[in-house]
Image (cartoon, rainbow, N blue to C red; front, side, top):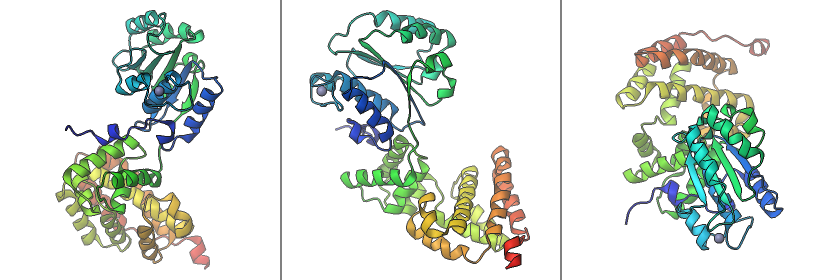
Length: 372
Ligand SMILES: [Zn+2]
């Protein structure tokens, strides 16, 4: 049996299966219920958050033999064909490779014909912002008066590149990036169902690395599963990511002005094959978390940080020794130095210099502390 990647295996098949986009799915389901679905829809949002999945579910809901219904049955011939991608009435077009006027002219000729098996012909154009100006112009007339048997669903990661004339003729749905905790919960369900035995803190790391993309998080989970990693340490190794433990040690070394320890930690990350630029970004976010924690306290900060409750408690005791100003000072200098490290041909050296500078910084006492 061939291995089915998790992103395909867990692709949502009903609106209820879609995570984190209820503001979109609820509106679409209401439109289906009230029979007032627009004939041109624009789905925008980051990659891997469910735009094409929702487009396919919608195509099924509109055409389902026992529909149109707020959710497809996923059992009838039409639903099954659409799921398999073999329906001739539901077409998925990659806007990046079919971007010219000729392709759009061809499409316009095709939409004159009534659907063969379904009630409606549906055109899903992915990465629609890649179409040429001429192609968009050719499409405009059709969008002004779309035939009643046709629906267009445009998906894009860059809605600002779509001409205003096209945009204004579409109903716009904005998909959002998922939160780390939300994504980690979703991974937790999958890990349990698949019997993977991945630890909670490791899932949180995967969710954080995926930056809000469900698809990316599942690809990472595939990678981790192939290796058989279950602990946070193993997952860090597989993904070449530095764990929060190292970040915490480096943060303390900087705050304590311990140059030798700071340099040794950077050297460890480097020899371990870690990407210095990414490590610097992680360090910036780590200090950002410390600033948030220092200012809001653990109870209020925990939902605003991509860290586990245990980490938050551990850091709370670390940060109590330093003033809020010292964190601001380091974060500010790190953010200024970050760009240079990204441009540098010797990023390790640049990070070392930056960290030495941070260590030699004299703490500026805040006015509140002074008054206190
Ligand atoms: Zn059906």
